[in-house]
Image 1 (cartoon, helix red, strand yellow):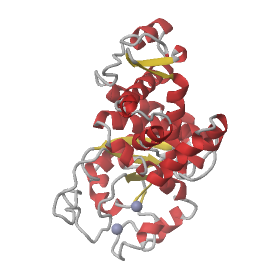
Image 2 (cartoon, rainbow, N blue to C red):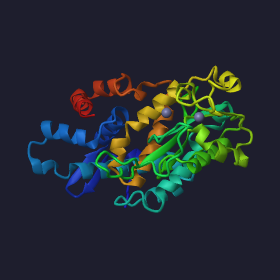
Image 3 (cartoon, protein in one colour):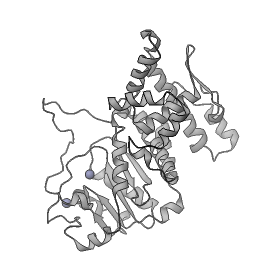
Image 4 (tube, rainbow, N blue to C red):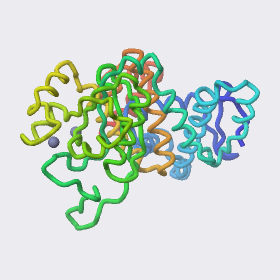
Length: 344
Ligand SMILES: [Zn+2]
Ligand SMILES: [Zn+2]
């Protein structure tokens, strides 16, 4: 059972023999968020540099992941989710987090619910007129092909790709803020898109335009939703529209009305955001579905915080910015980063 508040936490004991310091966890957590560095990469670097004895780090990966998750769950609970409760209440709840199973008791569901009302402010929501949505794994997005029932394409050797921990994001293109996230258990499908859009419509009072590269496939399902009646423009973005023919109901290349609506909408920050999250796939796939979705939510919040500070450097794995700051504080950062990059 947890015995510390997030602000007081300096050490995380994984067991009586292994302890991580707060700054070590903060530092590596930052690297993973910024550099898409997998635990395997960090593991490799440490094996080469720090722990010559194999036995010393045999359990490192598991123990590090546990400690990092404990710290992050405590931070999310104490600093974000439960911060509006009375201090005594927050303390009681924090002290009841079970460190062996920090995500027990539907913690991720509670976090997701809280998240949906707190991911952006009401003021931000009011000035959002369009959103771009996208799932992390691509299935066919052209209107000419029927939507496959299962996105797991058979591989060359005939086996079907196994299930991945996926997510579905909605991004406000002008600001780059992520306004909604859904867990994607099945490959991209219309129910998921409709659910995502309904949540967004509830959050964004002025929403009138939706941009989605599978828009035409989902159009029929989307139009049936009462909550989406105020949306006037359903579009495929200009870039993807080239793959859609002259019959596409959502192509700005075909319909003047859509072209005009999209004239001042730049989707490149949204595309970069989707791409940057796709880079986490390998790290996230090594986790349980619950843990993976916890980190998707947490990383979306980190992303939005940076966007509000006018920083987009985290969107490019090789850009400067946060990591440059981190490495000036910690001299050994560059060696870890190089290993991380070469292993990507
Ligand atoms: Zn696309
Ligand atoms: Zn189309």
